[in-house]
Image (cartoon, rainbow, N blue to C red):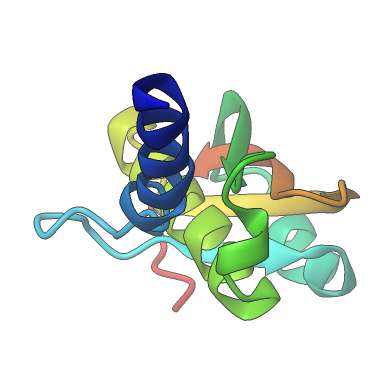
Length: 119
């Protein structure tokens, strides 16, 4: 009976503690996320931008997706991308696509550092 109570308590607490969405770091610099339909912005500045590499961001887990809205999962993935772009020194990220999973939102992008502000 004691084991059953512990299992029920764990099942109750797991969703409560796992429902936080990634937040942007308070000291982040602005990062422009450019989606596939804005490719001309990157092409126009291609000669002046330095490619820094790919970035992958994600939000959601198999145990928490039922308790977080799709909108919050998407914002969490965007915030994760901005956080990673800042760590990489990028001020522009071209988002290649959204990788669809039923339990999370994942974004794949290419990070750039451009001397011209594209905001």
